[in-house]
Image (cartoon, rainbow over all chains, first blue to last red; front, side, top):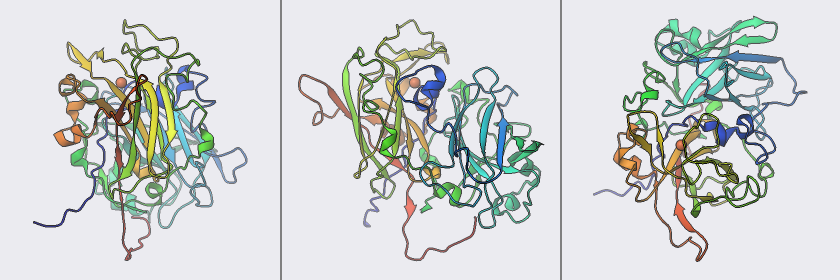
Length: 188
Length: 236
Ligand SMILES: [Fe+3]
């Protein structure tokens, strides 16, 4: 016999299901008056220093169908490389119930250490049994020293993590859950 | 904090054909593993000023008039894998009403809406990691998956710990519900002991005489490594 470790095991995940918005963004689905506003409407105030950018995207399943019932959360540092304080840098983005497009209005994060500027994403929906972690990097940045991107065995998948520049301050980032062009998902 | 890698064996599998929605929504390729970086080791912090007076009272928080159903307290603690309490964790819940119907335009189940039940609540854990909700017991409901699949009674939970890498959404089930072992979503978890930890026992020590029953649901988040000899690595 040996001494017990007395550690606990993480609670198992379960799918967020089709009604995740009732709990996480109730005002968005018409349940008004319980919370003044939904959590994570904007990651930073309007006067936050840095380059203000808009990222839009959709999430596609293995058949190429756009998910319309998905919830995306993002977490990032500001333009100076600081996380927080409080909930600064956090956003919650329900996909549009008709088009499936989600939109993030934020500031471009700074590089942290050798890591290129990136935004952490967490994706939940019906059919997703445990939240999916991924990242948004940005077209036009130098990614040659980023520890995560440089160590990917399949370098042809790096582009699935890089948002395409579509305008002066706008980017497009589509996520493919499965199959051709499957987005890199992380276990960090 | 240096997060301990996630033990995926205690979680559901991504591709679970018995739960049909997972078939086209599960990644086929392996996850890319690595050490957590500041993006995963930090996370949003929510203050008590976020909370309204009735946010954790689902019986009254929609209209102020009581929702219909069996009154219950749901309480527990949020801990990490090192068995330390997680204070200041934002816990959000959502659920069907007593008849098994959600307040959502996509839910067309024939059970009626309760005009006084919205279906969501939230709270923030105390110094000892504890939380408490007052709600009604949600009804079981049928769903389009197999020809006659029913969800056991359940409450959906979303939890923010101290870091974005601890983010967790799960579901709480009720002790004694015969639908639990039949449920295709429960069955996405291969480890029976992990399923057992999602089932809240009746807790008569917190039930209030002539008022409500109580169920206890503790939640464990990923832990962090405690060492005096931290090797500081940049990035990964
Ligand atoms: Fe449900």
